[in-house]
Image (cartoon, rainbow, N blue to C red):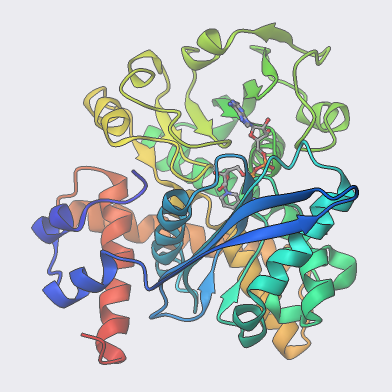
Length: 403
Ligand code: NAD
């Protein structure tokens, strides 16, 4: 439930019916099949999806998800989240997303490259026109973006590329950088304690989770538990995240078995007493079933859509505030914007400047949401952030005479 329903938003702000009509559906949805002729007369087919939710602010921007569960519904939902994320951060992008249904951990490099090349071939008009600009998402990597670039030959057609071929220093860490900044603000301004006395549990140790844990660890927080697809580990005195990064160099590796911590069960992980819980792996983790077990003082959504509506209701009833995905994990698209701008202009930006821009945007959006929450009497931070993003979308639709 990444987003608040427009019916609820109408109770806290003015939402013209025309804007509601436009925001309640995607502008464009493409469903296609990637058909690969393999050796020995075999053909394998993969379903693929591209969705533009709303492009009033600019071209559709959002990552490519590689997952055996990718679907049109999921891609549509993720594209809508991108519309609000880009609007909230003041980026000149609309909301887009794509998904390819396959298990990236079960194909060899040859097949993976063939899938991506066929994907580019099938949506070449969109990519060449710059109307959809992909980036990495769950299951896809900078190397995959390099393959996209290798087909389009246009550096601005894709972001999240390796630094050596026009990628941005800091892009790899950018989403985690933003989540860690959002967490620091939440700890200091909402929970009201210094970060160095803070215990954090993180779900996932992929791109978003590992850099979130890394930055929080460097800021002095204690990362007491981490869980990924292979298992969960715990150390009450704080896991040495740098050592864990060497133990698990890629998103495919599991934290299980790391010598510097003890292995724990998924149930134990979810019900640990902690200050901040950061789900940074997959959807629908905090549900009516799991929320009652959570004993955190705050939740920060690193993943897209990790909390269901019932899950959030339960957290709020327990007095646990939540910083929503389209705010907390926006560091990646902020960095993507810088990479895209540099690709068009030839400018170069250092890692420090990238992190500074992410921190600034996250901070100003956080302070604006704190104020909006008070003024608009919002029930949650999700409502407050939604009202800011929605306000920008409505203003842009008016400016373009769409409404
Ligand atoms: P990734 O593929 O790099 O890592 C995924 C992680 O999830 C891995 O550690 C994996 O072990 C773990 N995982 C998978 N299934 C699990 C399960 N059942 N239980 C526990 N852990 C499980 O993915 P990512 O890029 O880090 O993306 C994670 C989330 O963050 C997604 O929701 C994605 O949409 C969102 N996101 C990613 C970016 C980005 O820049 N990569 C930006 C914004 C949002």
